[in-house]
Length: 233
Image (cartoon, rainbow, N blue to C red):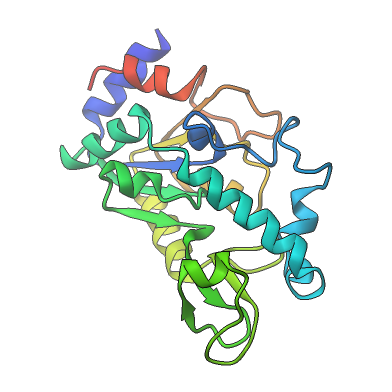
């Protein structure tokens, strides 16, 4: 009945916004570093994905992100990503706001995407902000402009979110008739505040029902790809 109800809501909504998190990507084979089993070298990623690690332990920082980029090369968008892209093309979805940095929504065909935590697919210098190539980063080269340390263009713990993406996502969610929150534990601030900003209907789809999840009008527990495949829109 929940699948049927969501199908009806999607059919009648004239403004639907999607918010996705790590669970959307784990079904493509991307490890979730925040999950209970998502450890890396017995080190909390929150201790690696920081500006402190970048400046004080660059070797570890670089190894972590090089490994993530190598994992990315082995994975691809799944049918769930393609379903959301199809919904956009059909005018059902007006925006996808994502916490994921892998670019899979765009690879699947979504064009209206706001990356709230940046993109791992682009590189810049931490010191002078000059853009750099992926090859330079992977080879652990320094910035050719100022000699600074290179980094992926992602939001590290403690850094501010990209203001344009944040503002665009927030305004879209405020105006939405329907907000689908997919594959996120809603533990990371400030993105976990977004579902509470809408006056429209809210739906939470995840394999693990988060204890921290905001009250939703509808909750669907299950694998994301399988849930999206069942929807008749």
